[in-house]
Image (cartoon, rainbow, N blue to C red; front, side, top):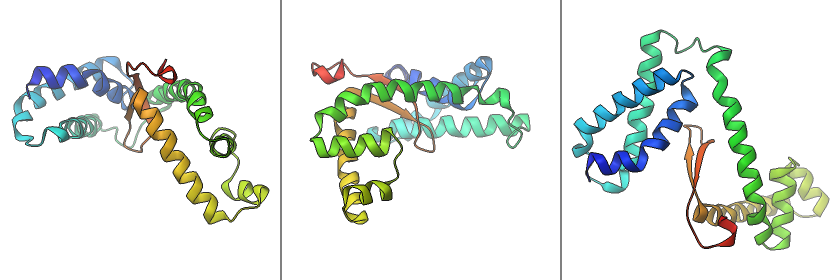
Length: 181
């Protein structure tokens, strides 16, 4: 695997990840160049091609930590540094709009449960009581429904996640499936 291939495939995702953690576009560009250099120097150390993406994002995460350490700001992040939280909220809103066709493609019982709990914020316990089902049964059904929707969703979208598993960016895959439009 060449540096050109890796960088061509992951540059935009790495940049989005950097923007999710660093507020200054100039700093993001500097970090991106640093990560490119580290990738060029150490890519040959990654023996398993399937781990290149995770390795690259670990390099990016370490670069961010080093950046804040150098600036002496690791624990001094201000309101102006959190601009990306607003962008994450916009990504969340965009994805919620995209999720509806996937939810509607599920069996009615699964769709109703996911809509109530995931979209409307109803607690799992309250939903279980309302539907007259055992709470542990609901948790099991919810897990299976989430797995179904996750599978459908990943057929159409490539997601970039932060270290907490929150979506920071997404890219639509080109598929013939109507749900992916």
